Length: 239
Image 1 (cartoon, rainbow, N blue to C red):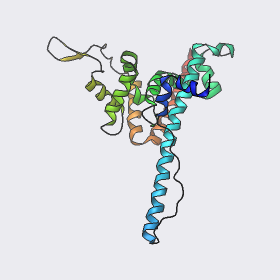
Image 2 (image 1 turned 120 degrees about the horizontal axis):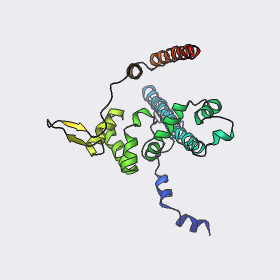
Image 3 (image 1 turned 30 degrees about the vertical axis):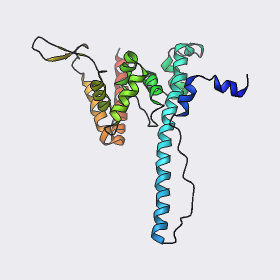
Image 4 (image 1 turned 45 degrees about the vertical axis):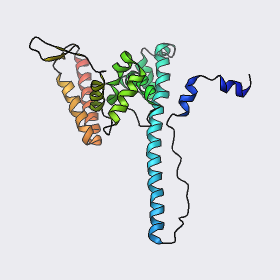
C-alpha cells in the first residue's frame, strides 16, 4: 500500500486529531515599522505578553498530556498486576516507591483518565482530578460526547470549576435524577449522605483554604499529615 493509499484509508480519528488543540509557537522577534519610541515600545510589549501567554498555555497543555500519558501506563500496570512481579505487595506500594506517586494519587489519575481523554480535543487547559469529579459518572452513564457537552456549557460562564460542571450537568439533564418525597420536596435518588466525619470536615476546610491560599493550605496539610503519622505510630505501638 502506498503512502497516499494509507492516508486515504486512515480511520476518522486521524481527522479529529488534526483539530486537537496543540502547543502555541513563541512569537518571532520582529522590528516595528514605526520609528516612534512609544509605538516601538508597544510593539515589543505585545510580543512579551504573547510569549507569556504561549508559555502559560503550553505548560497547561503539557500537564494535561502528562496526566494522560501517566494514566495509561498506571492503568496497564494495575490491570496486569505487575507490582507482584516487581516484588511489591500492592499497586500503591510500587507507584510510591518507583515513581513517587502515592496510592490515592494514582487512583485519582485513573478515576479521571477517561474524562481527560474525552476533553483533550477541545481544551488545552490543565485538567485536575477534583474539579472533574462531576464528569466521571457522566462518562460512565452517557459517554464522551456528554462529557464534552457539559464542559462546553460550563465554559460559557467563565472558569470551569467543579460547581460550574455540576450546574451544567444538571442543566443538560446529566445530573443525578430527582424525585419527590411524600411532602412534595425534591430528593436525590442517590443514597442519603452520611453525616461527615471530623476528618472529612478538616479536609474540606483545607480544600476551601487552598482556593484562597494554596501555599498555606499545603503547609497545613503537611503538618496534619505528620501529626497523623505520629498518631498512627503511637497507636500501633500500643496494639
